[in-house]
Each structure stands twice: as structure tokens, then as C-alpha cells.
Image 1 (spheres, rainbow, N blue to C red):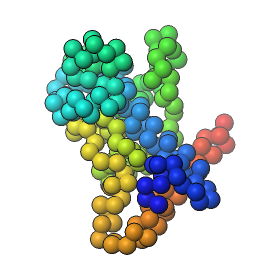
Image 2: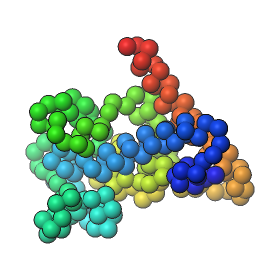
Image 3: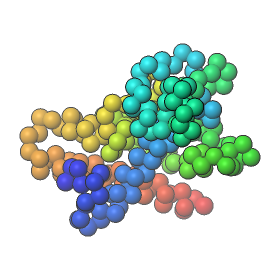
Image 4: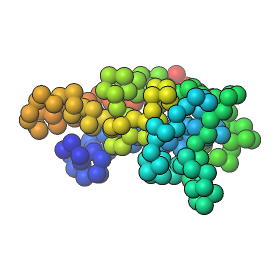
Length: 202
């Protein structure tokens, strides 16, 4: 059951509910951060140590720290840092993107257009995952943290592993599976509650 969430083989009632929640978490912590952080949209501070990211890690998200690779493969975006306007966390840039995504500078940027507003409850959920479980993404960690500073380096584990480590003293797979199921139920509730509250206020 633990890996079913990420392999798409869930077959119990309500699995779509879980998968939608997991997809939303992975989009925000993986796809958004990996495609936009340390780019011309979200440049990183000048003191960012890019040697913390391996080239293979970067390439898996179509990123690179090699100017030669960026020239040879136009699909790879090179890591970018600047002394002028920069962002220590993706969350800071995310707030900027929400204000600017409809401007003429970004209407043709597909990665920017994929970013959508997250509820405060959802952001708090991401904060719990990063601060309490020290993990990023449910199925696969992205290149950058959503809330932690880029100076911390890349996330090194997904939240399935984070939950396993938290309950590693529990030796039964059933117990771990139940705990993770409850956790995802809580995640799904937070996401749906945030959407409901937002639609009600509208």
C-alpha cells in the first residue's frame, strides 16, 4: 500500500481523492520549484553554492550547471544567480509569480502559467512536511525546497521515506500503511477544506 500512491495502482474506494492530493503536493514542491527556482524568473542569491546539486540530479529535471550542456541541449535550463533581485526561497518567488504571471513578460512562459494560488492551509501543510519530516514531495523530491532557503541545498528524500523514518520503530507494515493512509487522509482534508473555504468566500 505504501508504494501504491506513487505507482498509480491504488484500487480502494476514495483513491482518486488521495491521488489528487499527492499530485498537488508533488506539483508545488517538485515541478514548480525545479522548473523555476534559480532561473531568470526566480534567480538565486549570489552566494548560492551550486556544487550542492549534482549534474545528474539537475538533468533529471531538465536543468544544468554546465554552460556547455545548456548550449548543446536547449531543453536544459542553466542555474541562475544574481546580486540584484533574487529569492532565498521559492516561496518568496511564488508570491511574486502570483502577482506577475498575467503580465506580458510571463504570459508565454508555460512553467509560470502552471503556478496557481495555494491556500494558507496547504502552505502550512507543506511547512509541516519540510520542517517536521524534513522531506519534499510525496513520491519524488524536487531540486529545491518550497519554503526552506536554497542555501540548504537540495532535498534528499521524499515524504514516503520521511514517514517511514518517523515510524521506523513500528516493525509491522500494516501499522505503517495505516499511519500513512491516515496522514494522506489528513492531507486530502486540508486541501479540500481550503478549496471549500475559498469558494465559499467568493
